Length: 304
Image (tube, rainbow, N blue to C red; front, side):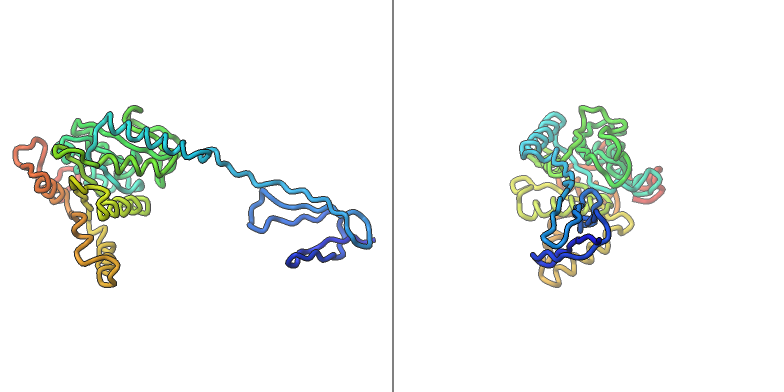
């Protein structure tokens, strides 16, 4: 004697002859955690007696139980900035290691800017070029701070702890939104004596996300409306050349006004160009500042 199973057709249930006592239907979204099993009792004709068991998919909302969790973390970011002081925020790739020439250039830049502006250097406290800028500032003997995230595209992803920074100098964020609030607030100038800047080193998707978010805030005068903040795009080896070409195309198509993007940042091909721009922006003389060396970098082997 055969058994009946069924198939769904719209809202109708259609009996189908079946040779097994138990029929399982996998969940249609491809996940293995959840499925529906039907036990068909040996009866005919219809109606069928069907016992349904369904194991619900486990969804972990532990980190999103309340908006208060995000607000609390943002407040912690602001407290850290209040303790260490605002300064220069470095954005950059987490994937370029210490053997990459852009890493070496970023170490030099982080060191020279920290000496020149005498301020705190901030970053995402991750590996790659963020690490390079951090090391440069430490070599200059200047304070550093960071907003680490639990997941990076590069290394250091298994731990919430920075490998060498003291714990009181950085915060490990669970929420990207809190981290971004921290990176933005760290460059806000509250007085004319504040020396801050955004420095965008070569990077990928995460870096571009942060670059354009901050650039949009400057464009809309949410940053620098009273006291402008310099934004430097470090175009090492023409890294951002195609991006700049695309932005020129945007002008052609009318999605940005002519000259609009160029007015929001300074594209720098070298460290010396970046330092010269900061000197002009803040009306600070480069000559006589200890540690500022132009010409050939002994670390990178390239001319500035």
